[in-house]
Amino acid sequence: MQRRDFFKTLGTAAVVGATLPVMGMAAEEKKKGPNEFSYNQAVSAITGGKTAEKSDKVHLKVPEIAENGAVVPVTVEVDSPMTAHDYVEEIHILDTKNSNSRCVDAFFTPANGKAFLSTRIKLGGTQDVVALVKLNNGTYLIATQNVKVTIGGCG
Amino acid sequence: MEERTSLIKIKPKNYSDGEIVKVDFMVMHPMETGMRKDKKTGEIVPAQYINNVKFNYNGKLISSMKVWESVSVNPVFTIAMKVAGQGKLTVTFTDSTGESSENSIMIQPKG
Image (tube, rainbow over all chains, first blue to last red):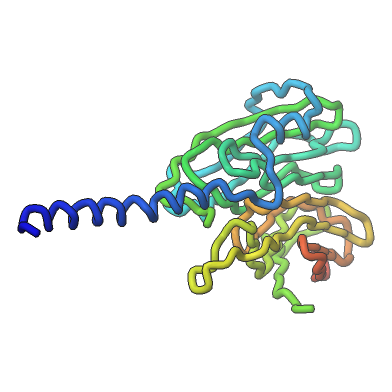
């Protein structure tokens, strides 16, 4: 074997060696979680086909840039008097790209005094975080914000 | 059954009757999605995540939550609550493997 042939084979081996783990990772990403809900499926499961209006009453607080996707603080607050006749029934926190788009579905009563929900979620990559709110008269309100994720948090 | 460490915090610490306070509920829980691989053994870690949280105040359900696996490890849930006299706030949660636990705190308004 000549010297240049030897380097050629070495080069190919290195390329193959480098691509194999990448292919392995691509296969891993297709693994299925316990629940599979795309964003559209999740929204239609919640609203039952009704359209949700964009509203200023829903205040969604998420960092614009999340350095760590494993812990993204989300706060949702809705302007509502929370009386027996006019209150927020449900607050849903959704995302658009995780394999399961549903994060938390919270149900409230007038005894809460204020429609407020705060928690921390995992985001697999840069995507939108959505707050979907149901009022007791059956209307749905929505607020969306994009979050840039530097390091994904799923896996 | 393994007991999960959980904590309920009322903010602010001193509150009066009729005031709206924030209730923090924290649990030490792995929140496994069922998609993560164990780095040492290479096996998929089975899913185990909290799927239900209930807030009871004096035996009355004030708020409940359906939780999915996209919530972070050791989750924190914060809700608002209107103080209505002395009583007991009980938080119950169950996870996807059927494990359940509860924690409670006394509500004692001042003044």
